[in-house]
Length: 197
Image (cartoon, rainbow, N blue to C red; front, side, top):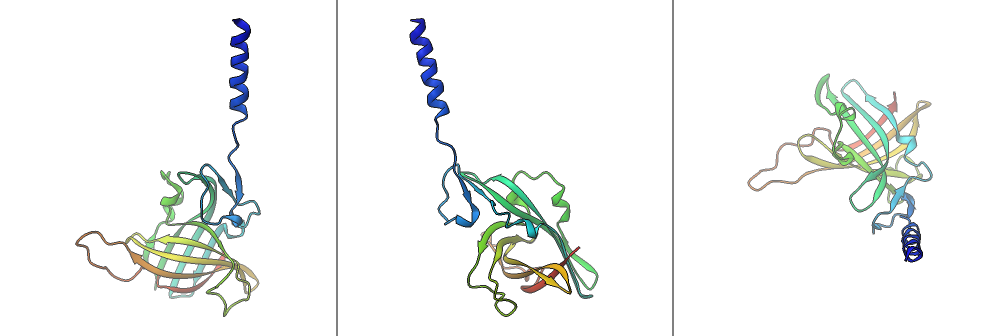
């Protein structure tokens, strides 16, 4: 009887240790159908060049974006590496929005940051008039008004200094029953160059 118990315990241990490992998938290979418990990892560190503080200050518009990379973020049924960010925007010296403090707050989900995403794009670029290099990251940007925009972001060099160029478009808002469409997005759609601070 003692031998049978030891054998059963050994079989149980072996079966638990042979359980399939969760796959690690390069985010570049993500085809849209998420695999349960998979980890979509930035194995080639493609998100890293975007990390940092980026500023546009042309005397009229001031836009500051701070990006951070978060690893193995729980996305519900899978995990992924994610670029998150917050921003500050002024026009003619008047601050219209500032979410930068959310970078130091403890948020329940990384997706509650104003900017987040990791979708790598290499075709149909909005930056065609600027470059033939189509590599960019596609992100979602939410403004405090509830409007959400799409951000395409690429790295570049401006005046010999590292920079990013963003293309912001969308500014849609999901309306609650009885709610009417409010004003335009705080940050106008368009192209912006931001230098590394």
